[in-house]
Image (cartoon, rainbow, N blue to C red; front, side):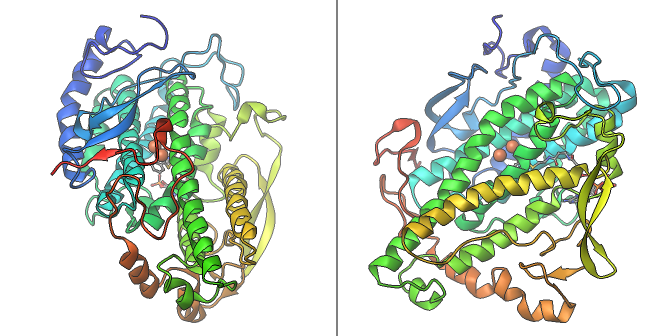
Length: 481
Ligand code: BYC
Ligand code: FE
Ligand code: FE
């Protein structure tokens, strides 16, 4: 088979030669029915029979990997696609730096690798579960289609991790693959593994913030795993990243369109002061301070996904060549970090201080910093729109100590400006920083479906261009009666 071409001769499209790999093929085929029943139970509710204009990954050729067509979601071809193997690829960091990259799991790192693959795998179905009711309140067919596109691709990302578990981790890999279908976002007895994936995604503002902030954690983590000395993991993550770009596009442009619409409505009504919340809401659009509160929530939840600032898990994963830094091979240093330091923000005697830590144990902090600067870029693009309307309000990222549940600041309360406050002060003020019940009720009141092709809910502007260059009134989802 030609490199990069996809094998459709089995149930599972793939470029990993599954037909010749009977054992793994059988394991995946026996996992498949459970996956489908999970998808029907926990996937987008109410649209399983609708035809959705989706892209399907059909190859890994950067110039033409996707094909667009109408598909019923349960018939989507979830495939296993790895970026092409790089000739002579090496382990590029840690104590094994310079060795030939591993095609099999090194025995001594088996548990560590399996844990990372399982955590990565767990987040993918979790996000589908979190988003399962949103189709019913989509502000347009365009947005509905984007939601479903993200959902099927997160489903494919689960397949990607399950393939690694079946192929490289034997019996316990198969058990873990089963567990990935058993846990449920928000469940009391079997929750998803990481905090943010057990939170609700109650409305479309949250969905856009989630795809901007939480899928971006996905990008950072996948970039780090794409550096792995374990070559199959690296290749899997590299291909996942091409899909991930669209998820963040959905979030960034979604919020951009909300901002655009709000500013247009404010301008038309002659409102210049963004803090006139009641007046802005009377126009049926989302006021900018509420947008800021949603941003505060989703950014702080996503920061928790980076783990503790100082982490021996992270040091071990790096030392052992399993998980690298963001753009590892572009960094100019020894790639071993035996004597370097990295500044970490910590709570020292009740004060937030920058403290130098060994760079090896500070790797979660470093990745989080890279994440923050990636977020900043998006926020400044949002602010340009507000500025373009002559409105003085600006969105900004809250301080990293704000609303944290993992790491250095988990036991402290801090304002978005980074001022530490007592628990009672926090109680009294938190409604100013995080969405209140009132805010939630207002947003909910706007969540009315718009299912006419080419029509958009009042609170969001239409996109500049259609998906796959389709015209403005394209019927992206043919809703089954
Ligand atoms: N919630 O040394 P520590 C995505 C646990 S998103 C609950 O601080 P470490 C996607 C930790 O497990 C990307 N528990 O942390 C996005 C450990 O427990 P054990 C997902 C947490 O290990 C949108 C203990 O605390 N991929 O793809 O250095 C839609 C101490 O650990 C949390 C990955 O995350 C938490 N937030 O770092 C769809 C990549 N944080 O083992 C998809 C793989 C920490 O002592 N994961 N704990 O019981 C990793 O690289 C690391 O495990 C973490 C944590 C970055 C998550
Ligand atoms: Fe994903
Ligand atoms: Fe994603």
